[in-house]
Length: 160
Image (cartoon, rainbow, N blue to C red):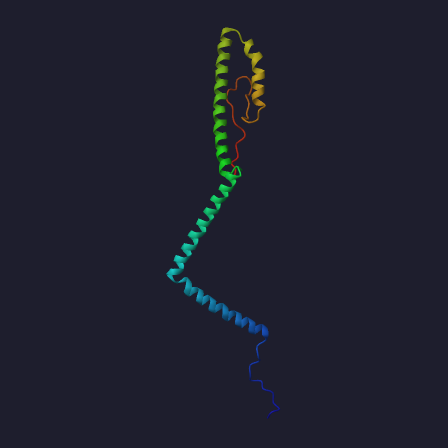
């Protein structure tokens, strides 16, 4: 009877199968333990405290970096944004002044043409409008002799 092979017994698992079984068992234990921890109210409180601390540390870091940049006299992003807004306001005011000057010049031309002295405008207009259109900052130009409006064709880009 010892000559017959034993075919009814389960073969021993291979090392790969054993590792897989141990891994799945460990994973299920960790999942159950994690679910128990997360289900508690104290976990939510701990998560809130950690989030508050992370935000506070980030704010402290940003303020420290701003202080370093200020002490090094390097322009910060906030400084550049403030200067960009101030430059935009100045450009808008200059644009209004230029439009008013053009309106007054057109009124003066209309008065001069009604009085019969239209030659004065023709000699002085070439240098004034030529210097304006070549500047590039308040882009746009007068179109012909009748156009009195100026349009800005380039916009300021905000820094990030």
